[in-house]
Length: 150
Image (cartoon, rainbow, N blue to C red; front, side, top):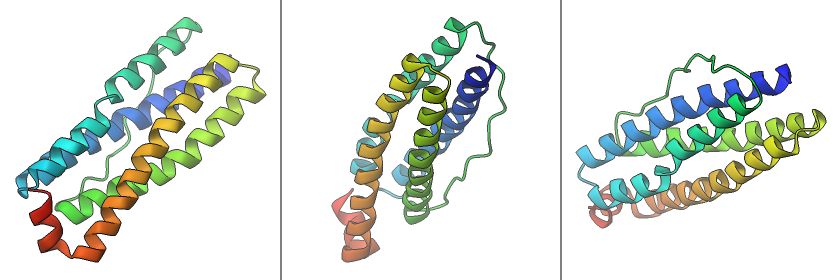
C-alpha cells in the first residue's frame, strides 16, 4: 500500500497547489473587472475542497499519513495569463490522473482508481470550459471578451 500512500500524497500536493492557483486567479480576474467570469470560475472550482477531503480520507482509511509538500502554483498576473495557466494545469491534470488511475489499478486498488476516475471526469469538464473561454478570448479579442464577462 505504500505506493498508493505515495500516490495519494502526490495528488494532495497537486490539488492543494491547484486550489491556491485557481482561487488566486478568481481574484485576478475579478480585479480586472470580469466579475461574471470570476463568479463562473468560482463555481467551477467549488468542489476542490471536497476533492482534497476525499483524497485525505482515502489515504487515512488505508493507514497512510498525510505527508506532502505543496508545489509552487503558477499564478497569472492578468486575465489571459490566468486562463492560460489554468488551462495548462488542467491539461497536465488529465495526464497525471490517467497515470494515477493506472497505478491504482496495477496495485489492485479499485476504490482509489474509481475515486481518481471521478476526479478525472470533473477535471475534463473544467478543461473543456477553459478551452471554450480561451477560444472566445481569441475570437473576440480581450476588450470585447472582457466586456462580455463583466
